[in-house]
Length: 322
Image 1: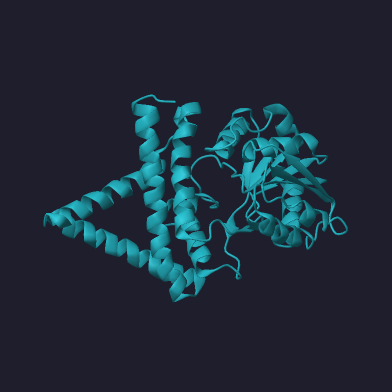
Image 2: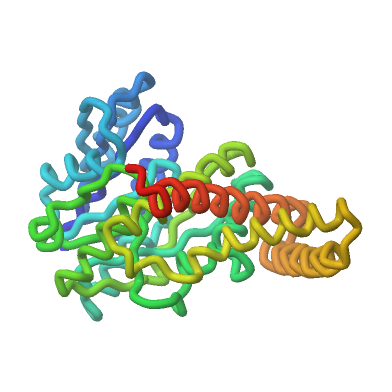
């Protein structure tokens, strides 16, 4: 099986250098790499070219269109039987492709996704963010959990699809705002089979500061409503949990200001939530510092997603604005 690895890139030369280095260490060697530079000001051409003696790699520069259409650009030029998409801020363990190959040859699926985790080299903030995005006490636990609710929707930071899927779907019809979930739903609607491959784990850096994390997750909350425009039935109660948490937090703060009993009750719930996050993160990360930072990461994730969800729900669903 020949894999085509497609990586859209925008102003992140340092990240692609680290990612390409991890690809040189893959145990399974039958693959090519396509770097799609999406109109970057800080391009990575020289860095990519420096890997030509170690990887079967091709570099393309195109006008800026966003990650979804940049992946399509790569699909159209790929030679593989199976396409794999990574975000540029991922590090790929040496056994990744071997694990994918073994899974597909024993239990073939038309498209797959894999989980993400924190690498030992990540900063405490990055580890806290990674914990929040994968914790059972936040919405992140559904992203790479074998016991996810409903059909599994591969996410584009770590996603694979067959050439047949690409030819049938035409790839991404959105370039941002939930483009990967839209494609995953469309793949399933056409009768293709999807699955989570637990061994297809990547180390996902995500963002290096809480402010960047807030902006990214706020965007995710808006994206969920954008998906609702195409597939209303795919908006589930679980997707509204961050919005409900955000409203609960607001009501608790107001109740405390006015000395209401609801404030005391809300405080008790929040303290319990904080303790759960702290001790679970400490157990997972073996670090009290990361556990402490995980509290902030969890609140930022839930509030940012909740506010983005509420913002576009009011705008697009209630007031019907495009």
